[in-house]
Image 1: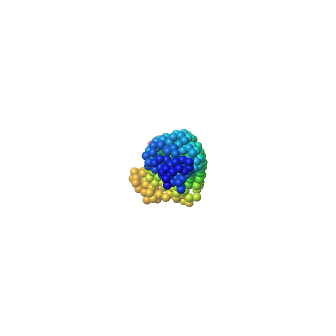
Image 2: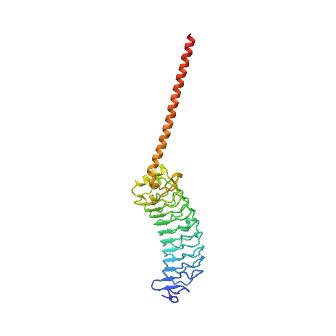
Image 3: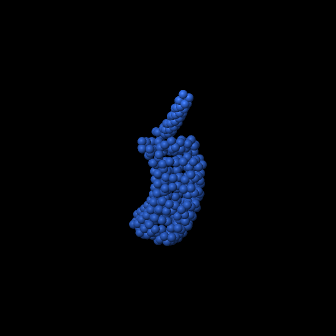
Length: 339
């Protein structure tokens, strides 16, 4: 270990620790205001977390062709300049979590073709542009949780065909749209918990043939369509659906009953699903009333049918009574005329 030795043709940056045996440069929590410009060429891991970086300038990492892991979490980064990550063609893991990023440069992914894991969680991103993420052809894990994302370009994930895990929880998404995940046939984990999702379009989940976990807890779902989940042609998928404002009625009971009968679909938190409406069932577990929901609806339908039938019978009886009265009046008039 050395803070002053020279390896990889560059001296160890001031205030950092360099571990020659592992090609690791540790610059954690050193009060740095900018990326140091003397990181050894042979560095395999560079940790810049817990500093005071506000901006990553163009070509901040020039010459670091051996870098595999770059950690810049827990700074105050607001801006990534164009080509700020150039020359990192062999980078496999990038951590930019816990910063203040509001947008990503359009060329963000261009120099990161080898990247496998990207953390952008706990930032201030509001929109995802397809150009920013388009070249992540080898990316397997993408964490975008706890941002402010409301909108995304239609093809924002189209270049991420090898993605295995996608976390979008804790954002402000309202609709899960068809076509958004068309290329994610290898996706195994999709986390959408704690958004504002109230609509899942019918074919939105259809391409996800490898999905094992779908998190939809804490959204604004009131009802769901069975066909939406039936499109999931997977081997085994766990669904998490609690903490939504469900309207507990016969229709919802039928949807969950059908899901239970699909072998590859499992609602792991079914017992935690609570009713939000109608008012008399608010806070009650769906599992405790599900078998009664359609009975109540059937009783209501029967009551309506009986009421209608009684009204019809009443009308027929009245018509018959009126007919007889009219017939009696006619006979009386005829008898009077004969006299």
